[in-house]
Image (cartoon, rainbow, N blue to C red; front, side, top):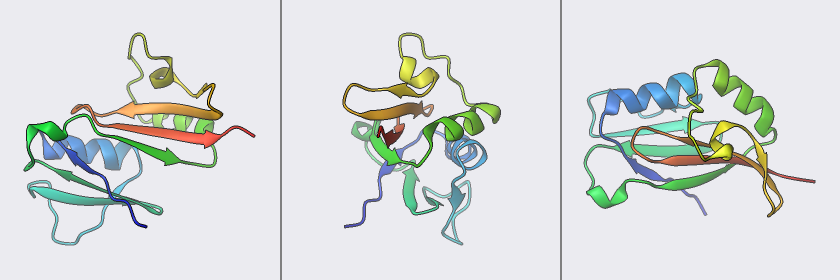
Length: 122
């Protein structure tokens, strides 16, 4: 099974900067530009599409991303300017051990889409 989430974004250029400059994604389709209505992004074995041409109901998607070391990844993203000012949400402010056995931190973009980076607690 192969899973590619599709996130609706309001501003393609802002979204591309967020995913490529902060979160290590890269544009993967040679014909895509910051003016394209749909852009394919990739990072290691992950794929993601962002679009400005879908209905409003797609805002606020969530995707879990399993990684080997959430703490190191969080520190890297924070050093690149990741905004952790989310009052009332400790999991947006740094990696948190969850009662369900995962260590997680969340990154939410300007359009309400959230990547939940996590690793299993051993």
